[in-house]
Image (cartoon, rainbow, N blue to C red):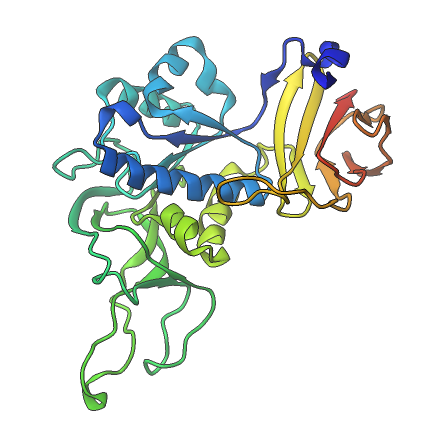
Length: 340
């Protein structure tokens, strides 16, 4: 009914997000491997969703077609969620994407072939030298910003490594960020002094700053353990690579999902109340207090209207930007911004 009553808004509606989250191909791998990659995808999906970074879901098998029809051109950053080896046509499409100025975030073993060799020339690592998937071998393994002192003094944030870790051979000009903490020595007190960093980075970025590799399953870590330190690693990285390409920012509760589309000259923002979402079903949602949208570089005549509430949104100018006050969110809201 809502769609029918607002058919003008939905006519010709197209995605407008600048980030694409790439999921693996269910038919190109075993069920066990797909389940691992799907857990990575779900964790990254939740991380972007909760922090209100607008994104679209892209099937890895569709990337080459999107290159041909121009669909990839609207994205600034693609996040490949532990998708494993890439088909030759996908490699060519991603190479072209980076050449035209696109940025990539690769997690897990994305972009490495069956022998562990890097498939993309811009990847900050040339090959995988060691793979660790044994849960016991990954117990008490972490990524942090600063090495512990004296084996007992730790510094936040500390993120556990869960699922899979790939030790890689970095290319000469790759830049390392964060620190990997291997398992602490186990033994009598006089021989065990806590975690000692071996100097291995937690993730790598190529010399141009366009391609980042997180050689462990950060999405699975967040999906299974739910620690925001894992979420923040990937969200901060995507935000940094995105730069100023995404014009919309939101100050909202984590339980509100934001998606971004365009309808002609209008910008359409959908807000979905997920407060009732449970692991396998849904309960009654709670009212979410209205937050704000911040839209960069819009015209002086720009306006915003909340379609469900049926009234204009209160707005104010912040230089060339527009700050939109949102109504309280019940089940969902649709905000239409015109004059941008």
